[in-house]
Amino acid sequence: MNDQTTISEQTTDWTDEIKWDENGLVPVIAQELGSGDILMFAWMNREALRLSEENDTAVYWSRSRQRLWRKGEESGNQQTIHSMRLDCDKDVILITVEQKGGIACHTGRHSCFFHQLIDQQWETTEPVLKDPKEMYKS
Image (cartoon, rainbow, N blue to C red; front, side, top):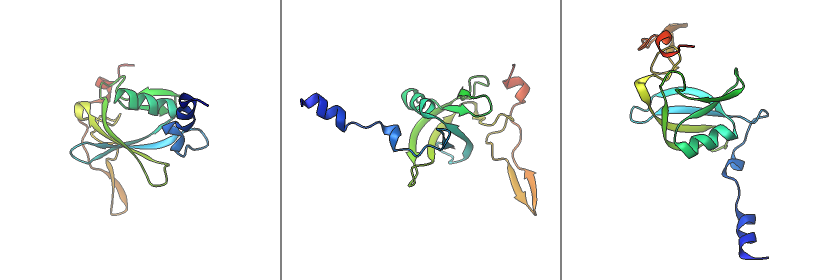
């Protein structure tokens, strides 16, 4: 056995450490760099995670469309990744991002978490920053 074979045998794929669900997905939380705001929750498959890591731009897996979804591909509101973290159970990823355009939600709001439970009722607590019709032409 030569040295090259030994090295390749010892090298493991970093995505193998993740506990993928039965559909080959892992939940991802996007947190804004600086403010610490939780912007959104989404899913990644291995390809989305690799592309995100390689390009430092968030790529997710759209369960409804059954395809890769490059954040901001239609709206222009891309997410530049500054760090990726894996939780202690290795089944959730936290990415710290710079949110381009200040809008993460398809509703035109800064964050997808704009409903707050107040007196047993869900209330909208964040304004629409941009009309979704202006962001999504198709």
